[in-house]
Image (cartoon, rainbow, N blue to C red; front, side, top):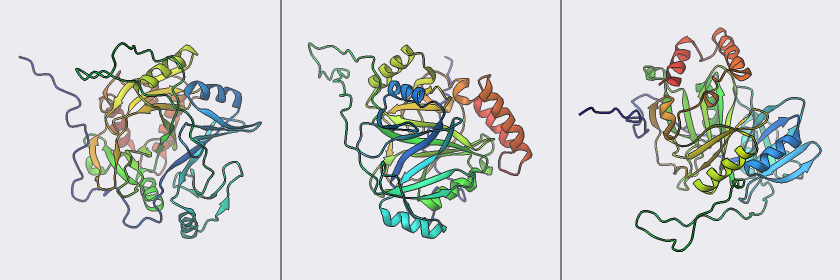
Length: 377
């Protein structure tokens, strides 16, 4: 009898740190942010961006000639702010502090200025700059948009546990109603310095570390990072960070109600000619059911549902990085998702690799070899 090797064996990150490895949290952070508030982008064609947003499942909260604010059905601030500009680019993440006093404390500790936000958002903000040069905004006391109707969950017959009789399941092929912003993933050439900056300034804590196979002694190269709200469970990751050849946005993720809304919403996007990047599947780190899409400006965005929630007591898990380790089930990770699909983006990444290898940062030849090995494993 032939034994088949399960490639996922050992990839679930229940294994913890070895002595002397990164603890995954700062001893005395300046503040502890409560959540990711919104993301800001610049795009030249707001009409095109808003059309994709509607098909993806956002609701427009504000529209002016030079700005679109997109929201989910949950109460709170908008999820995404898009400003008109000459080229498409990611402007930075905005985190929500517990209150205005935390924003003031952060401003005083960093020598920055507390300032009011525009009337459309309300509240106060402090603007910081992380080690990559990315603007990181922290806000408090913003206006709260009211809850909107969301898609009702379906009634399931699970095995012999029958809850639905004389009724059918017919989920419509309509946009998956986005409920909220879940997380953003960033790539950095100075991974350790940038990781420590977020932990020390914003009080985030690591849920899982990934390392290149055969290079664990050099430290992790990716981290999935959550908010520390004590005994209140929070998303497995609000921010994920990975070492790479360029400082850039990788993707952002938005929660939808369930698998049927995610899948039917995907069919709606396909019907309208939009490009699926990778999916549908279930991740390992975070456990989310996922579906990735490219918007018309080339930004990678994700629908997700059924993600893990951790409180402050769980210590970081450690696992090797690999392409097969990205999902428990689903199709293999695509070249588009991995950023190696032939085309302008892959060419930009190749140029970034050459530039990074010539510069003073953490991305060296051995790290490049580890990354290439991960993509093909």
